[in-house]
Amino acid sequence: MRILLIEDDKRLAALTKKVLESEHFDVDVSHNGDEGVEIALRGIYDVAVIDWMLPGRDGPSVVQAMRTARLSTAILMLTARTQIEDRVAGLYSGADDYLTKPFSYDELIARIHALGRRANGTNAVNAWELRVGSIVLDTRTYSARRGSQILDLTKTEWTLLECLMRHPGQTLSRQFIMDYVWSYETKVKPTMVDVYISYLRSKLSLDDHKDPIQTKRGIGYYLDVENA
Image (cartoon, rainbow, N blue to C red; front, side, top):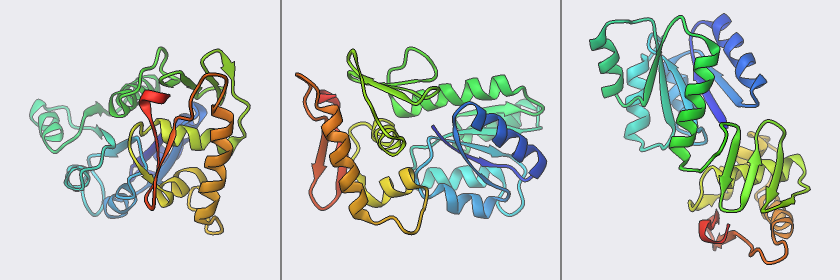
């Protein structure tokens, strides 16, 4: 799961990033609201964790900008405010949930998992399991299977499949996939997406299972839920 953390307390942000990465989340960090909005609008994040008090735009303003852009990113707001009206204001700004500081990391992790499942509409038996049709990813072990068969995937193939599974039925552009899989590496070319889609298709087409990856010519690729 890809997380955007917008927190101006650099020490807290560094510790939170370390904890979340130990849970196998991919975490990007911003320390101010203006930069946070620019990063969020890339549209590649499953969950954004946003502090209320930020330099530049404050947390509610960041949330409003994300909602105006119609991003599907789930939003968890962090706040030291304890008054009911403040919590309500945060939810009205467009946040999906809030967590009051100081918080336990166990609770933060649990809420992120819950928001991620809700946002992606996937069926998971466990918080660390991502499932679309017969395809299952384990985000703790980076393993994958289709039906009863284990898929022998490289790290890049696994991340590509994760990208498609976190957006089932949605056509993803090559640029979106490049940003997700290769994390803004400047030397990666769009043709690499086509190459790795081909690799992944060959590994997913097992026995009676159909190829679940569909092409929107000139646009990109999507995971066909009915054939998954």
